[in-house]
Image (spheres, rainbow, N blue to C red):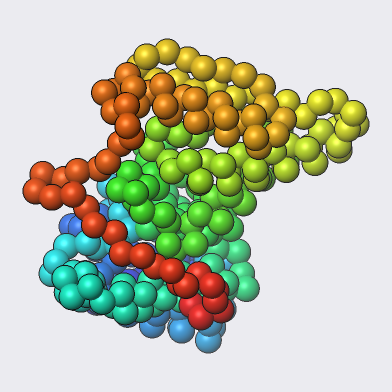
Length: 280
């Protein structure tokens, strides 16, 4: 079955469904029509559940670059209008709408597998993280690119990423995080998740008495800082030292502010948005 609005559902086998985000000219980004089509596709899947669902992007360049942030997307046009009027309501409603759809996809009572056939940026990376499993092409690139703009993942990708990092700790694997682009609070949460998983790994390896020292290192063009950390306090002290040293080297002794070509970005306070998670 082909849905002309941008989402396709194929059933190559009796118990397997493939959901395709079909908007390759815009790297399979999601605009209003795509979100509506996704909701319609999810309704079909809920009515005739497969035993497994694969989600992928059309073409060979992108899984999905997340939200279509072009002004011709009515959702973004409404958001811009709200910002200009200092009205939080459009932004809050948009976040709730997107989160409901992504929660609905991730909440399907069957394994949901992301087939990463290309770049997965922003919301696309969050979609991949929310899936139960990920299978990636060697050329695939996964990036929570919104954090470079000072924005936190708002499709549930933050908790999903923490779950994956915790899983890495459970397996005794190593994790490479770019603390130069991730907000310190997110790095703190991910380290906490990894530390908890690593502790369980050591206990089940028969070495619970061994000190839980996680080898951490920070790299940039100015040098390397490395050390072993068994607590959040020492880790955050080292992280802060790295950040402050880097800021001074870059010529920002009093902190760093993102600045666009025309004006400094203005942020809207979203107090209360996450006080009622069930509201999504």
